[in-house]
Length: 313
Length: 294
Image 1: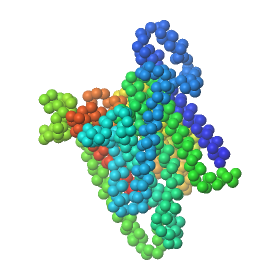
Image 2: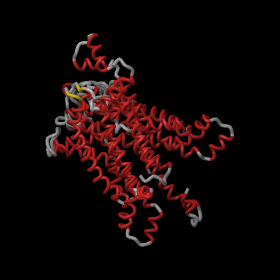
Image 3: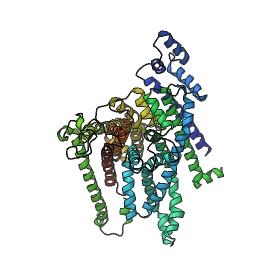
Image 4: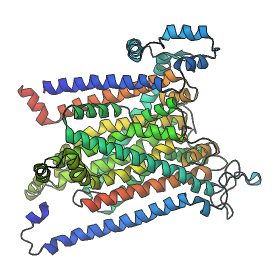
């Protein structure tokens, strides 16, 4: 168990280092020199002195690894560079908007769970019945539907036609409803399919027919035996779903005008504010990695086999 | 395989096969219908010029934002361009990119993945680490960032999507290789004097490829969604070129006056993704009817 955790930690460190290298490396993919980009974005003239000054200040003339190391040191101090668009340090700009994104991601995540668990269980239990067919059809459409289009159609229906909800912007809790539903519903579709698949697999295990032959009621078998056993497999997928949700926030925030870090990054892309994009990518990767770590660890605590193995040691 | 041994009491093998063949038949029907529509849509896109009533860039200033009518089946946009023609021509861009990216990604991913699984050792470890790192970026965030740094436009879009999404195929083919690697026939081929390269090309890759078909078709649908998402954000094709995602982003601005600018492009994306997902599902059902729960 210790060894497992140690290995997990080593891979975590490697992933984080790789994540930061790739994110930093993005700057070197710019078609033009980072110095020129910086000068452009600040609206300064391209004079040799300015270029030399920025080179000295930011170390653009040094080799990649030196630059990377300096950048990493700054990142550890919470310095991601200066955002030209928001006229403040990148970290400050992101910190201000991060709560909104987390609010959106968490509420969508909860919505997804509320939708997908009952439906997934229902369609597994009533396999090949009418309810199952309806759920399967809907979730198949849900997997294929573009989330941004779903969001736009909701805006059109509830915002423009029925005028129940605000069309865009972040004014009250009402503004949260549509982005949440968009992310929650579209992401729940694939999750319903997974829950159903895992549960059906469990239900075809031999211990289930053993339980049946002992005359235990169907409800008891499903809730006491099938569900806990399926839950383990389902939880590992939760981390990945959360990642999909985080990734989806960017486009959904942009569509709904939600004032989170996703729409901030989108604005930064159009404004060529590269440091903010960089900071955003690093933050998102970091959050995703940590969420997956938490899921992994909690998985080991939930599984009684692993938990008891740990106590023995 | 299991069912045949369990069903020893059943006298003839035909009786066991019968329910299987019914499921297979259903899967075949599903497959052919989906394939028919896939080919249909691809043909519509390739020969868009023949089917479209107007030039996709032709503007009719006296018919701006017109509702769907007999003359303009799907209505017109803010410049009076025929949406139906634009949808047909847009398919060329969207589907072509989706096919191209899937092709490249599948080729590279399968090759690297099988090599990693087959060679093992340090190469495998390095490969897995790289995959872990690339997969640590949630969703298409890294793709979006890449495009924004290397510059927008279709070639860059394709490049960015390829760079970030080969890992999926690589991982799957690696695990598939690991599952067939220790089969007896590989051992026998080796004893027969086949080189590593030959074993990989003749015995392992052909063995792994069919199961990857499922992923390939699924990937086409997924790529369609990514492409339209990226061009919706303005990272895809340049302005006048018709593209489904970009048409949606235009439609959003005219939601009040012309909702048809929003409904039709989205619907066409949905239909195409549904078709390719159906294809992937039906192939899954055809290949291993026991495992398919869908």
